[in-house]
Amino acid sequence: MNNKTKKIGLIATLLLMVGSLSACKETSDVNSVGSISSATNDDNDQQIDTTDNGLNEETGNLSISGRCNGCGHCSLIDSEHFSRSFGRSAPTVISQDNLDSSNLLAAINRCPTRAIQLTS
Image (cartoon, rainbow, N blue to C red; front, side):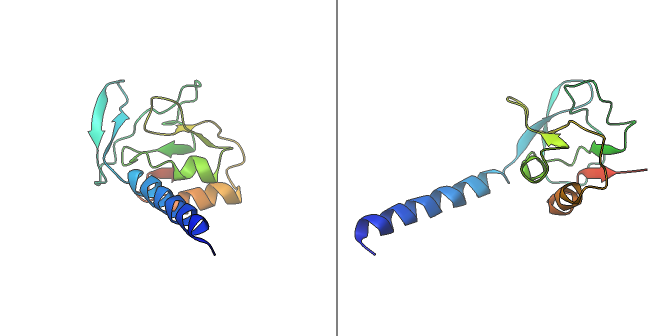
């Protein structure tokens, strides 16, 4: 392996590490009255409205609680149910269909703050 290839590999690895670490920093969330509040990885169970599409998460089966730190793992794992919107730190629930999907279960299990709630 030549020096140029080693440098490219090192730079790519560093960029991936920085990107994954930045998802864990403190972010701001939009709460249910539309104001911006600072959110950390605490035990806040208050529901927040993260929808832009008319779905009401608080009465639906799938919701995201105020614990969400905006890391985006859910939207990367399950784009059928979650979406990231420009300018918003919290993801949006975009579907209440197919709630037995394996991708949804994986997103729920991957959530570092356990903010995704699936109720019957």
